[in-house]
Image (cartoon, one colour):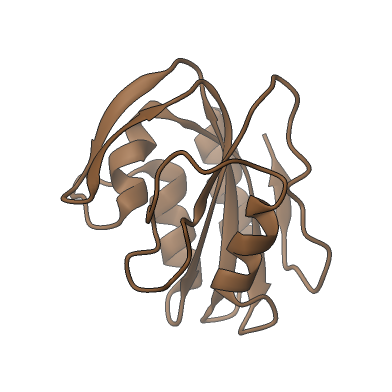
Length: 151
């Protein structure tokens, strides 16, 4: 059983709310230059990343898409997904952790490498955060989270 399958089983095993906010922890094994749709081409350093998003409806489906990757590219993460390994995810019901507030909180302990990634519809610098170094970042945000799953 591969990591993605284990993570996807955790999404299916819990009763997620219809909508909410989520964060996925990603590992990029080598520095890569990647074009993110019409946004821009970025150089992504090797290391850990978090991506924060939200889904008003279909939270489980959105997480499933991000864990498996998607054949069609719609979200910014769809362009990065083939290059990264998803290590974990955390979800928050409803508006208990607003997307932008959570992204800014995570950015405080990380670094911006892709301006406006996942944030083209808000004033945030980015919803993708890079963490330099080889240790897993302190990315977990305490609160009323539904599931935290590690690979």
